[in-house]
Length: 323
Ligand SMILES: NC(=O)c1ccc[n+]([C@@H]2O[C@H](COP(=O)([O-])OP(=O)(O)OC[C@H]3O[C@@H](n4cnc5c(N)ncnc54)[C@H](O)[C@@H]3O)[C@@H](O)[C@H]2O)c1
Image 1 (cartoon, protein in one colour):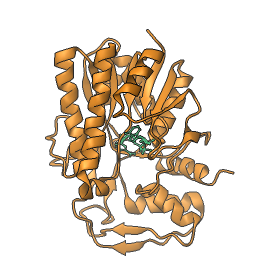
Image 2: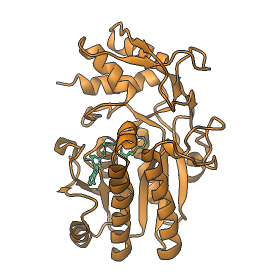
Image 3: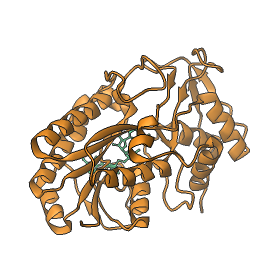
Image 4: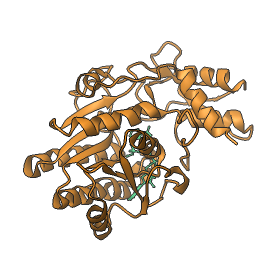
């Protein structure tokens, strides 16, 4: 079986870390990215093809040339708030773009795909920790755009025999411990880099949205998972699909941290007394989102190696303050 793996969105945050992990395990990552949100510097472990996932002719060339034995599909727009204001671009890019990739796979006989799904497919949770069988009713076009891909993957599996692993990530965090690659979203909307930016640059502020939730310190709880643990899960998913059927699994730490705890940990790491502004709750923010990760252990044999949030934030800080 070819060791070439097509990595769409390979110039992005999670994609870059996964390419490093692929290379370390003897695979050749073929990054395919239109650089709408990615970075050429993040592609260090294999070739970069600059292109759009909606470009079927270019995908055909790439499948013909590299004959990948699997696809890891990260490419997508990721900003939930933008998806509410401009749903069309999300359905076009995330759902229709993925359909083009899936059709190219079908026509080139490529049978394995690891798909970046999200905890957003669950919507407001009825029960926490969230298990994979929890009802799915997303509350944003972003979540629906991913939900639809999961449905399409199931139909393609039945009709064409493609096998998929839908990895429902919770909150990716941290950076490569060697600082060879890290998070650089623009604009940045994730809590940890925003808190660290506030520590790094006194001009930047951080706001805590809601302090009256039903949690021990009143701030929202989220499940942060180290990006290298995510990367590891992708290789395991790829290997799993070599001789197993399709599956959807949560990827989270299984424990949550409140916004307040993140700020406290960032103070410890940076030595800066970060003082957030306290704001109102945002619409649609559940108080607690935490993964049940039993299924990931059972199917992929995956468990997070980084369980200390201070260490995760330290890696992100090392990356942000590298020379
Ligand atoms: N970061 C998280 O916490 C998180 C959580 C859940 C799910 N996800 C999913 O994981 C994936 C990766 O997220 P990320 O944080 O690395 O985001 P990212 O923006 O850093 O990476 C996405 C990459 O896809 C590329 N891309 C977007 N549209 C493209 C297109 N049409 N053609 C080619 N390339 C395209 C971008 O240029 C970028 O490099 C996304 O699918 C996202 O929805 C991320």
